[in-house]
Image (tube, rainbow, N blue to C red):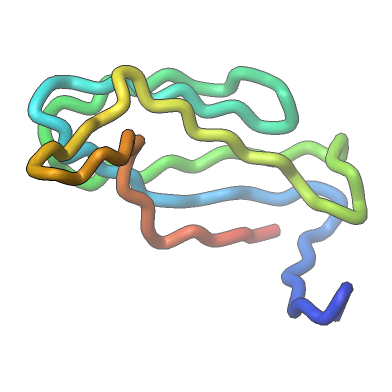
Length: 97
């Protein structure tokens, strides 16, 4: 526990796996940034789930772990009174050694 929250630990380096899906009516480009480094750009146009898998280096802040950013372009606006700007759906986030 750290600050009252359960934590998962990896060895000095590890792997990040997650699934992403776009439901936007037009294709989206997803940019994956890990610890400030652009790691991937994926075209999402088929509304299917896509598995992403990345090696993580030892460069993360040990107190915070790796910082993972997902940037979807263009953002999806559902409409119908829903004013949110959405990126992509995610599931299955897992850390492994």
